[in-house]
Length: 346
Image (cartoon, rainbow, N blue to C red):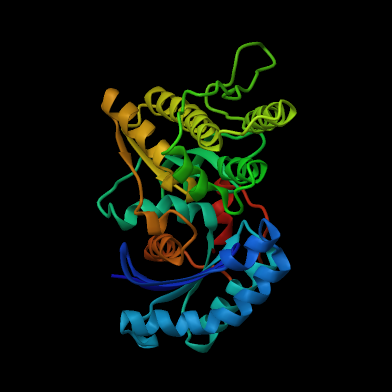
């Protein structure tokens, strides 16, 4: 059994967790949402400063909650890519320092690999291969998961990620930040068939459409024009109906592509990860479609959908069990393809 202390600071959550293989011993998450709400989005410099103020206390809390001392820790891990450079540096520097002070192996973890591993925290017996749908504020991808560190991107968004589209539409509707939770709440009160919105098919040079890629910029623009039409005619905007129609379109679009991809590649299990995995509309659509096609769809618990360190620790433990460690010279990267994940290890 391998026990890892992991740190996640890629954006606006300061998270520390201790994970024993696929079992969570402790998980601390200090969110900065209330701080960034006044700006309508994450301010990188502010996020970095908050991480600096919070990181030491979060580490101490994680150890106390797990009732473990440093002798029981087998490795130290931190998210190193992708993300906000300043924010990543806080977590990575803390992890490297702890690894040196306590003479422990160090591992840099890819943030998206962490979201893939989030499903293992509730489904520890899950085995590869399977299809992973990663949907968050910065990423929307369909990933063929062959094994630890072995991934193939089968589809992705060509513009806005799903979570980004939720935030932008929420801004158009004056709902505040973050957009996902409030749109999900309002959608339950609205009519998802009230407005017909485009799903955003991606054209191919040879004609036809890319089967798995998605596009959400056109959908966002369609909502903008809808809002402008109501304003032009001096009519009250039915916000709940717009939210429901928007969410329905996103969920339907992602579900079509995900189910088609799983069937085409003969994958019977679909694991969902990322903040948008908490969306009730997406969960409903995917579960219904999966049942129709005799597929298994897995969602992580809501607390592990958004950024957290437990998923990072789970991925790190698997790598450490396979003898993978990272050099202390490893640096952060704002962008790094998931297919390059093994470049992080010696």
